[in-house]
Length: 241
Image 1 (spheres, rainbow, N blue to C red):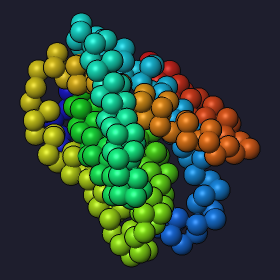
Image 2: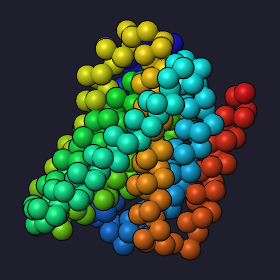
Image 3: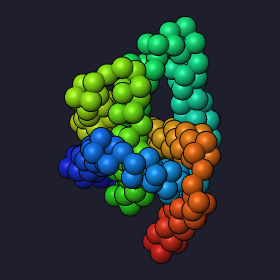
């Protein structure tokens, strides 16, 4: 276990920078951003899903015998939260939901990303690094999506830029700063439970959020990007083992 705040904080700051890059690209190079977002999403999904199944889940099972229940809880929490934002709220407030509600959802999701950095790096630098690879990459399309949602919701380019930056970028290191002092002091069994919850959340992001979006916007080499993500993650894990 590591108790060094600077490592997960640097990872979360890198994620914030990548999100900001996505926002910048879609604002200044919209055609290129729209054309290549699917590839980033597929590659990130391949990494997140592979890292979860090949390393994070087995590690959490070693640390806590009830880890399968927490894995399910992590996945279901993300599913129910997504259902609430996209179905319940959007159905009742369609115009409001176009911009502000997804913004709040993305802000909360990005905050949880920061918490996941705290959890995974508290287990080990290797576990945190594996999770960070896929998480950092998925921030690029997330920045693009956040900005576009705000534009569709009627925000000006300047307003959309500022709000998407704070919701999708700043919230990630904030989540790390707030959660790490607590997470770094808990016992290994509880840390294993939190790690398993994180794995459920990562699988949800990869399999239920990134891949369906990519399927709705098919790209010629999207399967290649997904396969590369899987191979990169598997290669790192195998070489470490």
